[in-house]
Length: 385
Ligand code: FAD
Image: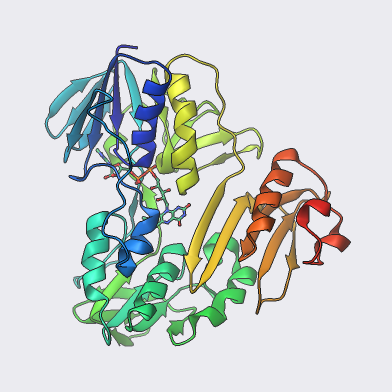
């Protein structure tokens, strides 16, 4: 490989650049990023940046020192084997990294609609979060919950509109979601409520009711940013399809981060994970594969969320579980644990119990069985169950 083109200058893209150089690749690297900013981390956008504690979250990396040709504000428009068509013309490659991430889904309607994906989005939204402002947040998933946290703290009058029966329902199911409902104290939480459109001055609900708002934030999920690959000869299915080496179906091509749907031997299914830990760690494997080295990406997925004063941490893949067991009462610190039919640990969600997360992640990696009677006692460390 002589010239690697990395499309997407988010964390996954920039970490792949770092991993290529770390593995001794001395050829040419071109990094293409749609945004005008240099690479930054997104988790702080809905936390420290939105609350005003910090203004930026740039990744600590010196692209010039790494001899990377960084094209900021340039988009890839299409791909054919060996050539990326960009908004600045064609670019030949002999190694390609697809790291275009995801983009927020928007709702119908002509009214102004905030989303929270980019640093610019975060700054725009932050300016709206002033005391007394009416803020309507659509979606009580991870992003919705974190934005609601910041808006309530800023003294806004907050409405959260969620189609499902509880918050976090799509992510972790309604049973666990119900445990988080009391956290929405002081927030007008509308569950089982569908939005028709975002209009000037607020949100029109299905059924006709109008929720007035100075700012509307849509947090209903994201989709892989792969439209530019629509005409390329590459397998796409809920993202860029790859094997466990992150190799895509086009020669000399890997996909990594939020946009990659990789085969997981561990879970015997294809996974596409929209979380920071994957963007951080999968690039080592993507770089190795591109350089012809043997490497497999098959993690126990991990993420966290900070909402309403709670730290939520998750490890595993709960669809592999059959039974849900709790450690601790909903009012305090608790964990939810998913077990398979033979009592091995499939996933753990720890709420303000970081030890359960750390120990649970190791247990999942090792594939150990647990004693369910000990498990329900929150005093017994998970590793002793
Ligand atoms: P992205 O970060 O999406 O980067 C992809 C880049 O590619 C973007 O800059 C995009 O502009 C660019 N791009 C797209 N299309 C093109 C194109 N055609 N040409 C050129 N460039 C293109 N995860 C957690 O685990 N915990 C958290 O607490 C957490 N909080 C989050 C909070 C927010 C507000 C957001 C938005 C995400 C959060 N995440 C969190 C998720 C985490 O940030 C993502 O998983 C991670 O950013 C994925 O990195 P990526 O590089 O794959 O994709």
